[in-house]
Length: 235
Image (cartoon, rainbow, N blue to C red; front, side, top):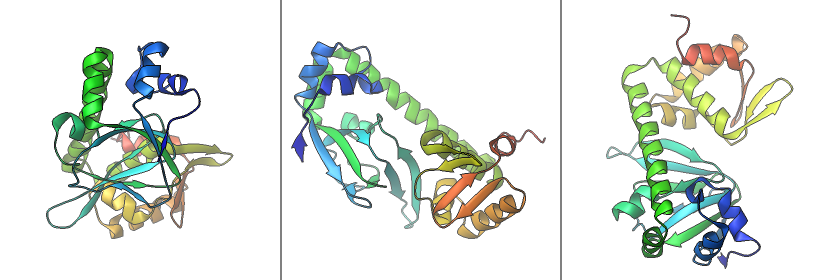
């Protein structure tokens, strides 16, 4: 744990949570921030823990998961640099509804819950930005719920891969690498299906030349064809 050093206002200015706030005010906001470092697979917090801090990811990737009442783990989303998380818990004063795990080496900024609420009163734009982020997250979860409830499993898997590619994709000569450790079990947890179904689907897509799937790694070889599947354009 360390207090944020360097030129923090310019760093915050590049993050959606702090948009339309002056550098002078961002300097003051940054004074209340603490920087944390986490190693790969280290937990940031657990589902059910008291929500005591509001976080912004600076580097690395964070995985948010939730355990259902019957013990099934669901991957809700991956957090990318510049994104805020733990927004709902801090604003609602409820325990963390998810577990946050470092996918790789992670650096983040955090503000204590009460201090962040004070800052929102002091800088209303910060509260407005938080509500905008919150609305976007709710829309994402509504879309995910609709997909799981109504859409064919192949389409859900295609959409999950495209979402991950937009968040973490790295262009290669032969396709787009999803640049995080991604197992077939991870995909099953993201799409509300079984490991068998994901394995069968990816194996067929490999034969069709859509993807290349290796141990904990997926490369999209034909993004256009995957979009066709995701949007059900063949129908």
